Image 1 (cartoon, rainbow, N blue to C red):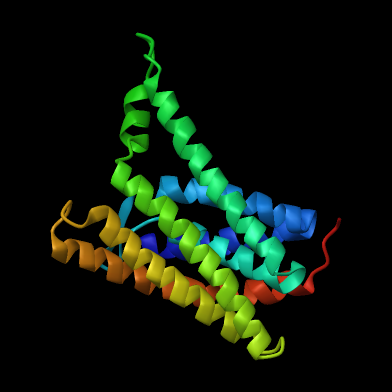
Image 2 (cartoon, rainbow, N blue to C red):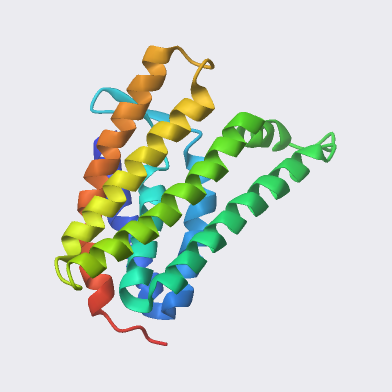
Length: 223
């Protein structure tokens, strides 16, 4: 069942990203990066089994940010793509600050949400720092790598620069984040397994996003 849901999520998330570009142009891509950055940091707290292997969620949403910045480089230039990364970084920081502030309020005697929110939003400084740092570094690296490959191939072979930049930066981000956040928290074997299986999923997801990049570049924005 989880495997089917993963396919459905890939189609829905990438289609919504392309629709955001269609409706709002680069502003829609900036909007999507902010939304995906926040939702991914919520989803990543959940661990699921896919094909018998444990992996965190959030992979599709994180990957959609790489797709969004690739579209920005392709259609609007590297300057706008870098702006998208900074918007994502600001969104994540704002989400973390506001969510932690929310937990400080003393709940009413009739409150039913505080305990659930506390469990979901209680972030250790280590996980928080790892998440923000790797989010920024991996996305900005993707922007520069994609742009370099674009120049190298003189604007052709879009599928190569898309897959190479996304897979390299996404997998590097995943390994460094998992080890930075969970090493010595979980057994080493479990940390390695989560990192490897998550990377396998990210490679699959990166290959799936290529058609959506071609669609996004081809369609004209309503704006």
